[in-house]
Amino acid sequence: MDRDGDDAARFACLASTAVSGHERLKLLERGVAGRGLAVLSGADESEDAHVAKISPSSTLWTRMYDDDYVNETVPGWDVRLAVMLLRAIAGNDESATFDWRAYRAFLPRLDELTHLGCFDDAEASVLSPWFAEERNQIRRAWDDAYATAMASRALPPGTTGEEFRWAAAIARTRAFRLPPPPPSSSSRIVDADVAVLVPILDMANHASDGSETVRWTEATNGEEPAIALFPTRRGGADADAANAPPSPPRWREVCLSYLPKGSNEDLFRAFGFVERGNPHDALPIWVECACEREVGRTRAAPRGRARPRRVTLLAAAGLKQNKRTGALRFADVNDADDLGEERAERRVAATRALLAFSTRGSVPERERQGVGGRTLRRVLEDALDIALQNENEFDRAYFEDATVADMRVVHSDRVHAARAHLREQTLLIAAAVDVLHLYKDHERASAAAPGR
Image (cartoon, rainbow, N blue to C red):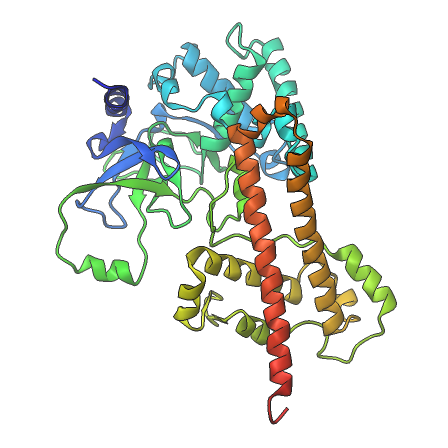
């Protein structure tokens, strides 16, 4: 049997010990991002019918405390899960009912993990300053937690710092964050969200428009709540598909939205990857200082000139906004077709960022009221141009300064992930500059139109 077939057989064997409905799942060797999970579709895929479920006793989970939300770099739920995982792998957790030692073969190695906390010093040199500082905070927190856990004998004897870092990164990148489990007759009440390592189901890759979701089942007919995989239902085409004749069963990849409406910055910070052409991408714009300088040189403008008008900014980008949902879409679908899907999505993301800046943004209202519309746009355009220049210079400087000895760093998975984030952000900044230029052209055309 070839290696892929052998891995698939071992995966199926592990799934059969923990997952109800395991026969509808299989290991996917080549998914959208490496290994993934496939489901046999074509059976009952209604919104309320789960595809497969797993008992909490086969998972590792911990409560999410208030401190876990305040500062993500403070040792918390990830450290607690890391200790549980290492103890389960070592066979020191008598309550574990799943073979985590065997399952480790399906988890990524430390050198394959691209979470910020896994970047070594050489790889961290390609990170932006704020990401590099966050990486340093995470590493210090993990190192301190490792020393404490070893001193208290919470970890298996002989656990190394690298093994602990691996386990903490596995927790950060693969744990599901779920609401408190539904109450049942035999389990204790949990009054906080939980972070859960769910074997088998955690093999699913990410997609913004995920085909499935993971959530609790209700405690019914004497059954305890379980963690289950449910199909994601949407309106429109899915509603029409529900009335179509049933299709024959087929295998398709399971994709989950790791962070609903998460930007690429959110995804990179939490998991260490970006989604190409992410439709939920957002552009952080830091212009307080620039705007304060402009305010000091600018007289108060007449009322109504304090910020760009939403409707003209949208029109310049070829977009319209749904008044009820706030969703942005292209006024003419041909515009999106001409741009291509990825460029169209970036333009929507860039316009969303410009709208956020022009309507609330990071500039205090009292300062914005003293800035004319043209001044505000000039400040914003300068900030975008500077950001774009900085990104390009940072990118170029790295390769110009790289030595032959550094070339091994250039080819690491983590450096590729960091550069992918940089590329997506640069493209988004360029899209924002383009939209702003379109807005100015649109404004000039409107001013020159008859009747103005």
